[in-house]
Image: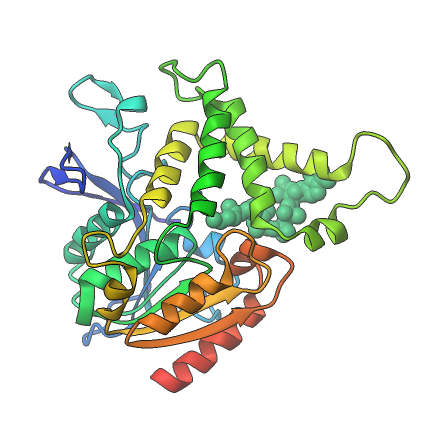
Length: 339
Ligand code: COA
């Protein structure tokens, strides 16, 4: 991955009124911006994702894939607050000369969208053909589409919502409680709270799947009273995340998810959605237990030009990262109608 870093030369004013000096965003671009600049595909990653979209969405983006860099200009940036190269709790706080850690300001999905827009201007992109993201990425896509207005043609929002539900916030809050209960949380070191982060990831993994998925993939064949497969699976997933992610970033990004409300200060969610003039494809997943499919249906119903499609999968919320054939069929039918 050839990742680049965008540095803003101005302090970045957050929705809270706080200011973030030295804003930086890591990003990748694949393909060429054509003369008409009309083939820009902008992908927004989910909670623990990064700018390397060819890696984490390899079934959809890449050579000979649905979004092929030989035909499109594909941009993906690491979101504000994330630890993969953008301004985050682990980047340097110039006023203390050490990482921000616990002092990183509260950020919202609106702040994330605003930061992406600075990068868009820096890249000299006037129009985005397709903005696409799942989960947190879908929330940021909606926020950004709201402010982009006619600079975006299509917004594709997968397994996401216009406003964080109490259910989502509940999962996030309990995961932050797991981080808080780690006795290293409070220390000034990058791996503070890493055991708590592992527990948080295990809890999150339960919300990302449907019980039927664990039944088919993690059932034990032999009779036993302890040492279950699903137990080692969740522990493994927790350890795996803690090797590539930190509890500070997890805290910051889950708080941003909680903040998500397209309608805040805009007369409510329905009213805000009704101001979206681009084509919106909202994709729900029938067995998503985290972002319910009804939340995607709500988006499609309330925008000016909305369409709802569904993925059928026991992978639940994770299906947007796994069910490539269904995704491709859905995209095909959407673009056949709207191109
Ligand atoms: N005990 C220990 N490890 C186990 C296990 C068990 N019982 N069962 C599977 N594993 C390990 C496998 O060896 C494999 O390890 P590896 O990743 O090091 O190769 C891993 O678990 C496979 O995980 P699984 O969930 O079965 O993979 P998948 O193909 O179904 O899903 C991903 C792929 C990338 C979607 C998934 O692994 C993942 O990371 N999900 C979370 C992604 C996420 O953040 N989603 C939410 C976005 S908001």
